[in-house]
Image 1 (cartoon, rainbow, N blue to C red):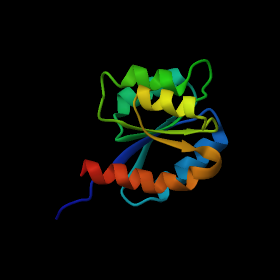
Image 2 (image 1 turned 180 degrees about the vertical axis):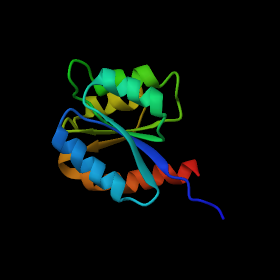
Image 3 (image 1 turned 30 degrees about the vertical axis):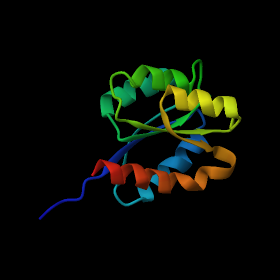
Image 4 (image 1 turned 45 degrees about the horizontal axis):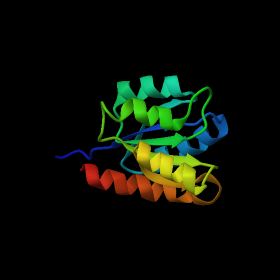
Length: 128
């Protein structure tokens, strides 16, 4: 009997409320497995390197450093990780910077949070 592979997901956001909401979304999805959470860039970099998730839900604004720093630190070692940037800064310059740093998706927290499940399902479908 074949077991279904689950896609590991890591969450990075400095807001405990947002992390909790995203964690609920991920754990409610069939085929997804939450492998870690972080509030800061340094915690995120260490956790992502340790868990090697398929996808990272990543805020741009973090304590001390940015989500761009996280992507730049991870990308050379793990180019297959799909970064889904979730931010309140949806201006074109942030979108451009995130995509240049390696984001696969760029979502506005205030209006596109509901798209997270679909995006994660799309990422998972490319991994199986």
